[in-house]
Image (cartoon, rainbow, N blue to C red; front, side, top):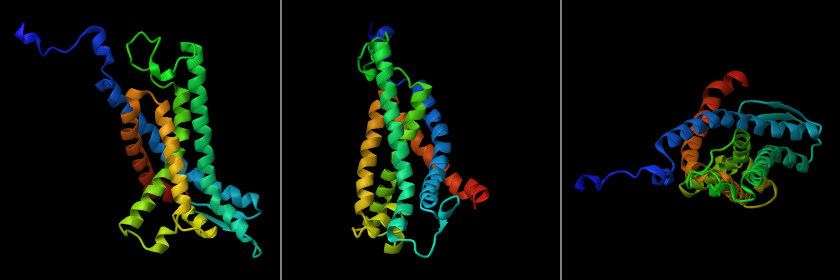
Length: 244
């Protein structure tokens, strides 16, 4: 009687309370472990984007853990320099777009096959209330690639904070690839970073929208921790040792 008023719901009612603690912690840990190496891979592949642009243009290039040096003929044009600077961001954007498209295709294909064209995120046909089906392994791969776009969002955010709070000199603010592209094209320093940051924000929102609803907060928490730790490990430990 009176002692039953605070009882937890049992049966079907309990299944709608998502995410469960176990699923939450498990997803946070999985995201941390997945994003840690992806942060390292993203940094290296970005630099190889610069190198590829240099090789295509007929220049020599050497990739280091956090930079790329190239050796070009004296008559290298400004357009070629612009192309090599853009190589890194273009690589990041291309991989992110490829991953986002793959995730959308995978979700659409799975939805048609299992739930007769119903929305994948609705949970219909699962027989478990509104609990959503976890990501499949291939969808994890697509999502991790799609979140390469987060680099553009992060860079734009850090540049904006550094400018707003006067954390860096103008020379240091201009060291980023996107800022260099703005200057090379005769634009204010923040134009290209702002544009790529906005598109990156939209792309990350799209990945979140395709992610199972109960796992979105764990994705943000685990992904942020894993990315920051992975980036720090690469820049401070593994990068200098493997690719000085």
